[in-house]
Length: 201
Length: 201
DNA sequence: CTCCCTCTAGAACGAACGCTCTATCCAGAA
DNA sequence: TTCTGGATAGAGCGTTCGTTCTAGAGGGAG
Image (tube, rainbow over all chains, first blue to last red; front, top):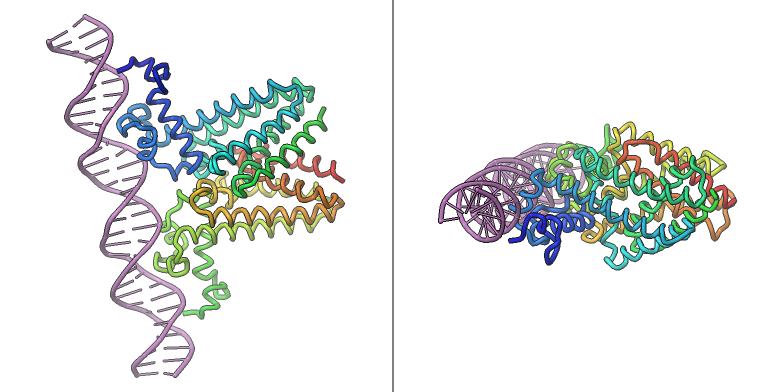
């Protein structure tokens, strides 16, 4: 058996058991939501036994969901950073972003939208810790966008609010794209957000 | 016992059984999502027995969800029409709309967001008829907004796309508001949408 | 060697799930 | 009056749910 460090960080031949469980939970809840995803399905698809799941996540399904939301948070934060840092113009970056989101939806046959949204919807009232993890994810994404907007010349007192709308419009457009199985909402959102950003520079 | 017409249309002392079931389903799925809502809970809270539920909705849970989505569709279509028709300026109408959405969220202790969104999320791949009913709802809302924009002077070839972003941004902002338990995302979305609309007139 | 501790393994529990089924009620038709 | 059929009523089906629990595997420390 591998040492603890290897198990938990995945420095071995593949991802460790814990990492495999988190990734599987995130993907399943992204597709089926929190209530639609069972722990036994997670353990089956992650190729981990039920014992392992409860060993790493003694808090049960809720703790799993929080970990999955944080995983999705980190994933999209990285995408945001990469997309914005490669470009000077934030309007162009937003267009690249909508393209990437559309591609992700299309290549998953419109099944994989925002992992945070699908996990948190329906749990809002009953699981405050999941809700808080989702709120932190949104806040982090906004902070990244806001920083990039300021660097590109948007006024200090306008950038945070503009970042709010950028993230929220992307979220809404991705949902519409998923439901209508069409890239159009995302394309249009990109154009309108680019126009809105340009109007603040 | 009342006649069939009275039962189904609610011309009696209160809403008929069928209408009561639909309304309860819509409210519960708005709060808990599709998978998080049980048929027995619906029958209990609608004060209808399980037999009645399956009598009116032999298609089971999926048929119930479709009816609930259509109910939410009609509800918000009415709100849209009332809000826009009372005002000349569509930018002002959008601001009124964000205010109304924020109030609905706040007065339900942030539990009741968009009934269509919360019902359809997580069912995208597995229940095509629910997905289609949701797509039709979004399309209808867009059509209402698009008509009002054209009447207010937005170009014919810009109005449909602009309506897309109006609806999608409202959707995303309402979700963010619910998760963060704050009216701020909706207020900001209203301001930015008003600015975007004005830029097209 | 033995001990220890992390991790794996899966049987088992009570509760809840969606749904089926038969029985009953009762106003209007004949 | 009897008959009919929509609506109500809820027990019960098999399945799955989240969770608990005990048992064992296996490498490092003493």
